[in-house]
Image (cartoon, rainbow, N blue to C red):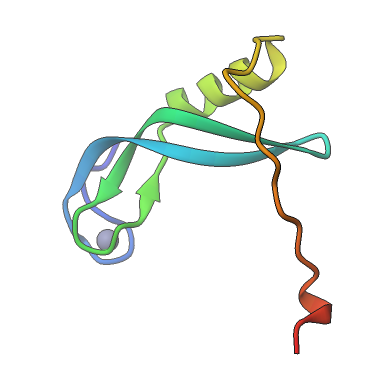
Amino acid sequence: MNEECLFCKGRLQKQLVTRVQEFEGHWYIIENLPAMVCSQCGETFYTPDAHDRVLDLITGGIEPIRMEVVAVMDASKAS
Ligand SMILES: [Zn+2]
């Protein structure tokens, strides 16, 4: 993978991040996912490997470490 940010050409550093992923109408929070994060603008880039790991976790019938209640907002109701 390219070690340079696509947006600002900053340097990418490997970090563990939290990713929110929708799958078949359900939302999943995946913690400690390895990703490349731009040290300059903070943009996060996921490797194809990390993407596969997310899908494996979601579709593999793995027990979640905990459940969270997620607040859902309607932007059309904002003033
Ligand atoms: Zn950047």
